[in-house]
Structure formats: C-alpha cells, structure tokens
Image (cartoon, each protein chain N blue to C red):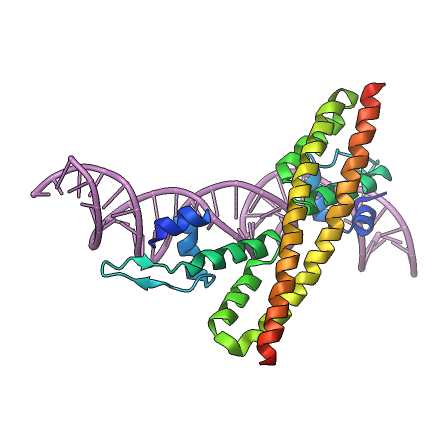
Length: 118
Length: 118
DNA sequence: GCTTGAGCTGGAGCGTACTCCAGCTTGTAG
DNA sequence: CTACAAGCTGGAGTACGCTCCAGCTCAAGC
C-alpha cells in the first residue's frame, strides 16, 4: 500500500499522513526501492482508532504520547491502559454535557415553535 | 456589572469578553460616564448558552451567525430554530460516536487488563 | 492629591493542527 | 522514449480562537 491508497481508504490526505509520521502519530513505514512509503494493512485500524480519540477530544500531545508508548511494546501496557481509563472518564463527562445540551436544544426548538405559532 | 464581574461570574477572561464583542458574539453593552462597559444580568445566560454550543462542537462562525440573528429580533425566529434543529442532529451524531468510543475504551481497557494479568 | 487596581483601544503574538509549495525523483501507460 | 501522475523533502503559510501588550484613562481608598 502506497501513501495515496492509505489516504483514499482512511480519508486523511497524503499531506496529513506524512505530517502524522513526522510528529510521531504513525510509525515510519518501510520504503520500497524507489524510496516510497509502503504501509501494512494494520495502519488503517490504527488511523481509525486515532480518529476516534481525536473525535472524542483527546489532544494531539496525548495521542502522540500514546502512539510512542504503543511503539515501545508490552512494557507500556499498563500506562496505556491508564491513559485510556482516564480518557474514558473525560468521554463520560462530555457525554453528559452533550445530553444536557441536546435536551436544551429540544426545549429551545419547542419554545421557538410556540413563538412562531403565535 | 462591569466587565471584570462578568469575567468572574462567567469564567471567561476579560480579554475573551472583549474579543467576543469584537467578533459579534456578544452585543456591545452600554457604557457608563467613564466609558466602561456596563452589562445586564442577561449576558450571563447568553454566555452560558454560547459555551454549550461551543462545547458541543458548533463552529465560531455559526455561533456568530446565530448571535446576529438573535440581535435582529423576532423576525429571525424560524431561522434560529432551524439552526438549533440542525445542531441537534449533529449533537446526536456526536453522541452516538462518543458512545461507540466509550464502549471501545471499555473493551480496550479490559483487554489490557487481561494482557497484564498474563 | 497620590497610589493602585480596573478598564480602554488597536494591534501583535501564540498554540494547535494541519495545508500548501518548490523543486526534484520515480513509475506506468501509450 | 516520453508524458504525466504520484511520491519525495524541507520549509513556509494558513485558519481558528484566543491571549497578551503598550500606553493610556478612570475610580476608589488613604
């Protein structure tokens, strides 16, 4: 898989993939004879996971830290677990806030409907 | 209420309040004899609402648009309602994603625990 | 009436997370 | 063998959302 294929399948741009490699979010892949990046299939799952961390509000710096731990192998398992447990708690908080705001939107929309009806 | 009081009660900084005024998120308040901003109590509710829109991922540009509509009064009611209805849908989507990711965190954490136990 | 804290304006600076570009090399299709 | 698309590097530029600063005025306490 060349970088363009990864871009197409992951939804990231080629530039973003190289940027993620530069900052340590994605491990530098092998190169072919022409010096081009050749990725394994597994990178797609990793990118998807990164996107989920991102979409749930994990900071770049923390994602980079997690990626670094992951590359260090099994010795970092418990630290990674702790990071995920922490993140899980922040997701829970955001979730609660979202639900509150969703309820607020419902009330506001209903109120607007009433005002429009008058 | 002077700007410092609003800052304390809203949790925003004085600089942010002036910035929000500059970009149109907060209506320019009256000024006292010395030229200082004097806010009504209602600004606090408005700020809280803005924060909720913000925290649930509404873009600055859209919040500004909503604020502008609000200042134009009742004629914009239905447009505002539509914006909130749209935002409600995006919140729902984010909520679903968050719940998925929360479940993923749970699975990962459990898996890590297992690997650590070995 | 002097000090000190709060407020004012206009504009510069910053952190995050990309995004784009120039100038070059490589690979595939006609 | 020649286009031309895709890839490479290093570095500059961008968008968003604040945040800070200089240099000034205003207000309240001693």
